[in-house]
View: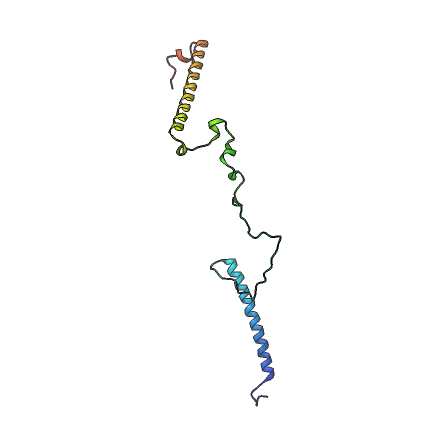
Length: 148
């Protein structure tokens, strides 16, 4: 055998070793691919498959639509301002910011605030007058009372 230069047993051992080496290389490449995907340090494309099998299914939609709101968002953050504050009547039913209002709306809002302040002040003065009539030492007649 050795005189001819071809050793059949040695050749069979080499082919078995080569097959084992190829299998180990594939396993190691698969392991490295999984580790790259887990660690995500750098982009490692998936190994190229031999051929993809394409199947058409009738029960699955062609396009997967996304939700309008993210999944991690709570339900309370997804409602409109009208739903949070409740529906108003008349002009109060429309929620507007300062930048959205025109001049007449701003004037109307300012006059409404002024009239509500006037009304509250008149009510407070009426209460003080009533207290001063019922108890003369207190209220408007007391010179030592601190005014606001």
